[in-house]
Amino acid sequence: MTDFLATLRPEALGAPPSGIVEVMNYGRRREGLIPLWAGEGDLPTPAFVCEAATRSLAAGETFYTWQRGIPELRAALARYHERLYGGTFAPERFFVTASGMQAIQIALTALAGPGDEVLVPSPAWPNFAAAVGVRGARVVDVPMTFGNRGWILDVERLADVVTPATKAIFLNSPCNPTGWTATREELASVLALARERGIWIVADEVYGRFVWDGSARAPSFHDVAGPEDRVIFVNTFSKNWAMTGWRVGWIEAPPEIGDVLENLIQYSTSGVAVFVQRAAVAALDHGEGFLAHQVARIAESREILTATLAATGRARFVAPVGAFYLFFGVEGEDDTSRLGLRLVDEAGIGLAPGTAFGAAGNGFLRLCFARGPESMREASRRLADWLNGRPQRA
Image (tube, rainbow, N blue to C red):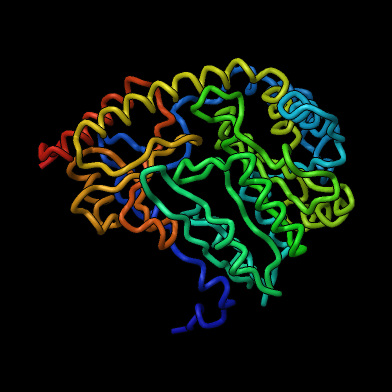
């Protein structure tokens, strides 16, 4: 028998299987199961976004297009950032990608390769570490600490692991999976470190509109960085406008590296379908009402979930400041990889094991509460019943 695997690149062979996908594959066909394992809500894409795509298709916009994105979408991205952060944003700073994941891949391809290191505070979304690894670079996990105030980033610990091989710091705030949200002061400290050591920051602010202290948005590197700073922002349309299946995102970066980013897009996907980009323009220009509706219903679901679990006395967590995940431990349950599978069978809910998010996630589970209050009330009841010794299923 031919040994096909022996001929593949070690970086490809070393790409880790997803612990999230393992649980999803185990439970996705279970009748009546409430799936809270993936990072998406239960609302479909709003009609006005779909209609923009339909009009584009009807108009025959089915040809190759601009590698950097159609001018109308890059201009809409600039307007959106001006509304959100103030100041002036040039369309030349924006590059349209085929998902937020591709935005990360493009940024990493530009920054890191064999022999290089990228620092990642953890627990962290596993796709980023895997994307670093398949490029031959190495992730350096910088564990955050968990206590009564939630998760805490120690910037000094971050500084201690910088070496001549360090090319970038990846910072996701608000964070998937923990809900940790950097303060303006913390962002300024990370930026000062990057400036001092001459390294890049890859800023994943995908959940910046999902904050639970009444603010319109989370603190951002936009608040502290200037045009001379080495910051690449990666983002997606998936979360704000319920467009996970559309696969469209963006990069914001200094225009000086624009030709490089354009080439990397050309040599990967050769651009994003125009009808998808038309839908993205509609989301940016007309989507604030939908986004506000999403945030309000998710905020209610967050309150239902945290109150219900706190009442059991068995869940260990601090209510998240941002994003739409609860990262929690269960007293007496250390093997959360196995526990995720058990909860499919015994509680009728699907959660992601904390081990999928790095060693710092051991002992935790991630639950996505981006669902309507009634659905979250039922999911919370099932989980509480299980914690209290009353399993949903035999």
